[in-house]
Amino acid sequence: MTSSPGIVELLTIFVLAAFVGNEVISKVPSILHTPLMSGSNAVHGIILVGTMLVLANAHGTAELVLGFFAVLLATLNVVGGFVVTDRMLEMFKSKGHGPERRQEAADRRDGDGKEAA
Amino acid sequence: MNRLPAAVDFTLADGRDLVYLLVIAGFVLALKGLSSPRGARRGNLIGAAAALVGIAMTFTDPAFRTPAPGVDHALNLALMLIAMALGAAIAVPAARLVKMTAMPQMVAVFNGVGGGAAALVSITEFLKFPHGTVAVYKIFEVVFGVVVGCVSLTGSAVSFAKLQELVTGRPITYKGQQPVNALVGLTILSLVLATLVTGSTPLLVVVLVLGLVLGVIFTLPIGGADVPVLISLLNSFTGLAVAASGFTLDSNLLIVAGTLVGASGILLTRLMSKAMGRSLPNILFSAFGSVVTAGAATGADARPVKAGTPEDVGVLLAYARKVAIIPGYGLAVAQAQHVARELADALAARGVEVFYAIHPVAGRMPGHMNVLLAEANVPYEQLKEMDLANPELPTTDVALVVGANDTVNPAAKSTPGSPIYGMPIINADQAGAVVFLKRSMRPGFAGIDNELLYDPKTTLLFGDAKETLTKLVQAVEAA
Image 1 (cartoon, each protein chain N blue to C red):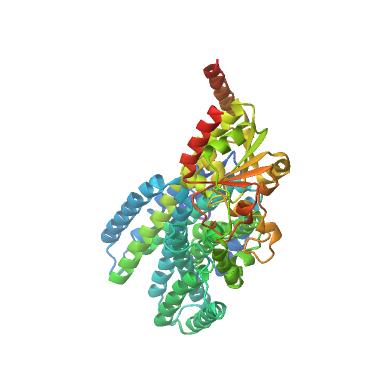
Image 2: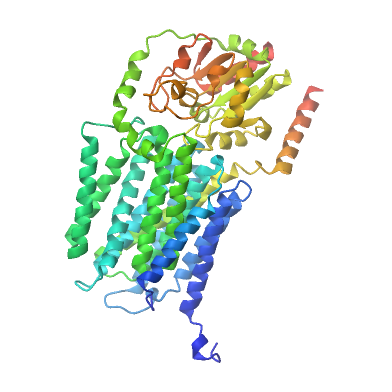
């Protein structure tokens, strides 16, 4: 905030970020659509940083109240976003990792085999 | 540092910006990780760590110390810490305790509040503008942030209500809806222009209220089955609102993080609608024309269906060669994934070939079924995505549909007027026999009737999916 960058500089960053955002998720399998949506939802929770700056500088009741609620809502977004995504991905823990998963499946077959015997 | 010449002097502000740059890199890595099964969980943790570092670093910002008239930094800091503690105290249990079936609405809530926060940042900054000396683009950044943030806030609230079934999941349509929506949109546009010219606070408040209204009326006509796509779109909106706040605050971090989400969110939204075999405009605007079709569904209930007993179906399954289990939202609601696996195991023990045919949008969110079945430790080899499952179905003896409906509805292939026409389905109708486990004759989430229920080769088992499956396990073991 001390040395204000020009609008063109900010626009440059914006345009480049848009290309990166498009590129970085270009090959996502459909089973990860929801976790990815949830994870990127958590990423925009970084608006908390913005709300903190606003509240830090707030004066007068109106600004304090707006700032307080902004920080509260942003905290919900960032904390809840990452926690709920982690919980979704927990379910994938033994999935897709070839060896680990096959081992587990093999263990289970062994178990069944013993029961039958 | 003191000995360095002034030209390469490294200030605290530079250090902070460098750390923010690392945070940005962390977010890019997080999104990259989240788009592959192997790196997903680590990607999310990287994102969380990056966010934490960014938040911690922000406490060193001069905004927390620089004396300003009327600003009591100690009070502001105390309020901030209270708000953060309160937010975390609500968010963690909410995210931890929410049922797997309710996760999409949880994401909607967290997304909505993020949009609200972005809108509040923009509004507060607007109130701080010195009158009459602000560049037009500065006002534009604020107004954009307010409108998009507000649409995201109320749009997410309506999405939540639809998924939570507080309001009907069917598209809510009324006469003249499209002109009304267009009118509100145009009014906002003209008021935004007026605000740019005048910089008037009352005008901004009107724009804000209309933004909130637009979020509601834009979301109402979207059917329940399409709501996850809508949430993804609103997620992208919130990203853009955050980017707008970043412009207002001159924060590279917010601009990049917001834009990353905005851009990837729009791509993801398109991928999700593609997985449903629809185009995004079709999902967003098609309900306006489908009122008649949706209404016609209720009148067709009088036709005969064949209801069976678990014992009959148990025998049918036990002496089949190949069985396809097709799970849907009903399986999730009944928490029947474990007993579904028991049934599959019981059949496999008799030498029956069993596989799960997974529709990409079965349940209320893409990937929902994979998550649930993985939780029940279903062997990965038995899970077949739709494209791999469909070629198997003509040689399948029994298709056991557990709480699914729209994803096996042949109307998607045969009835051009149907709201789901064009959506790829699992071809359960091609199996030798079809068994539906259903709670009732109520149509699926899309609100349309399913011809397959009346097919002579179809047997219906009414009741809770979990109880019925338990009885089926017993019947198979007894057969």
